[in-house]
Amino acid sequence: MKLPVLIVGGGGHAKVLVEALRLRSMTILGIIDVASDKIGAEVSGIRVIGDDSAISGYKAEDILLVNGIGSAHLPKTRTALFEKFKAKGFSFATVIHPSAVVATDVVLGEGAQIMAGVVIQPGCEIGVNAIVNTRASIDHDCQIGDHVHLAPGVTLSGGVRVGNASHIGTGATVVQGVKIGRNSLVGAGSVVVNDIPSDAEVVGVPARTLIKDS
Ligand code: JB2
Image (cartoon, rainbow, N blue to C red; front, side):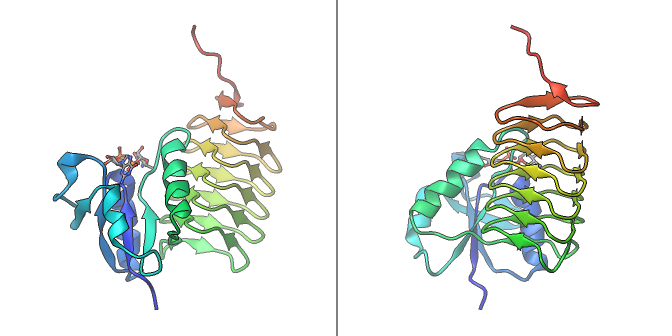
């Protein structure tokens, strides 16, 4: 039996999740959001029932959480929210939009979210709490770390590794066999042809370290 879900966070990413969950016939009990002006309102027809404290009204074994926080940068809030509620004993639902093509041997971590139009080829591993966003494409034998966000339209060739909590921006392309470290940011539209260390920010074609104005 599928447990009902609570979505934590009620912004743009939550809207996309509501659609996928409905198509999977999941029961959505409500949305949890910290913004006081959202409480009592609806997001895609689902009521915002309270802030994070409302979750304590549910037993961890009776529900699953869905992490509704996305990001257009490093996924710090999303990661913290996942870790906070795991520490309280809650589990997170894995969400796979029915239009995604996911090879039979792909290993998905707890709470991974695979959105509309995604393709994931054989031999891939996707970490816990990762987002593989709309129409991203992951070729064979890629390893995607925990909390990683592959933004819409990202293309990874075979054997790419992405370290925990990195963000690959919209439409970026990563060529065969490249390794990207942890907590790194790849700008939208970049083409990554060389390994990227941890804690780096790269952008461009080919992708290079971003030099910031002081
Ligand atoms: O700790 C929290 C918390 N922090 C922010 N707990 C709960 N329950 N809610 C929290 N929020 C809420 O998340 C904010 O009050 C806000 O309502 C929501 C975030 O909405 P927003 O639309 O700003 O971002 P998003 O995370 O839904 O979407 C981002 O990431 C997506 C992947 C955006 O960048 C989107 O454009 C993007 N597609």
